[in-house]
Every structure is written in structure tokens, then in C-alpha cells.
Image (cartoon, rainbow, N blue to C red; front, top):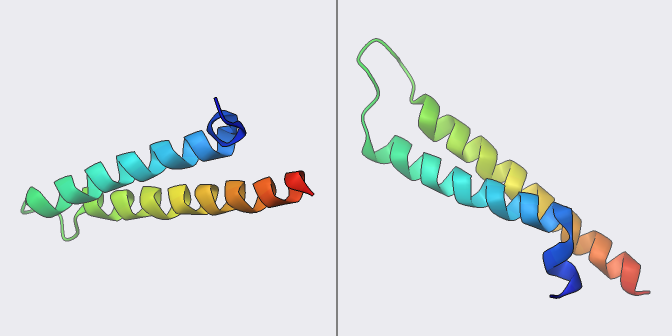
Length: 68
């Protein structure tokens, strides 16, 4: 197994990205209830997606520092 796959930041980032995409797509496909003005599933899907991408970028930069 490569060093990148064992990095916890990479695994958490990948998990957040996958969950974020699933939740955002679900939020776009399913209509929210009529008493809610905004779609919470779509918003939290985007939040998870952004956090996951930040984790992936963080793991990428730290990997370069370890190789030197």
C-alpha cells in the first residue's frame, strides 16, 4: 500500500468528497419540503465537498514536504 493511501488526511478528504457529492446530488434531485426556504441537503453537500477538497490539498502539500 502506498504512503498516500495510508495518510489519514487523504482518506478523510476522500470520504468527505464522496459524501459531499452524494448529498449535493440528492439535494438537487429531491425537492425540499414546502415549509423550508432553502435546501439543507444541497448546502451541507457543498460544505462537505469543500472540506474534503481542503483535506486532499492539505495531504498533497504535506506529502511534498516529507519527501525532501
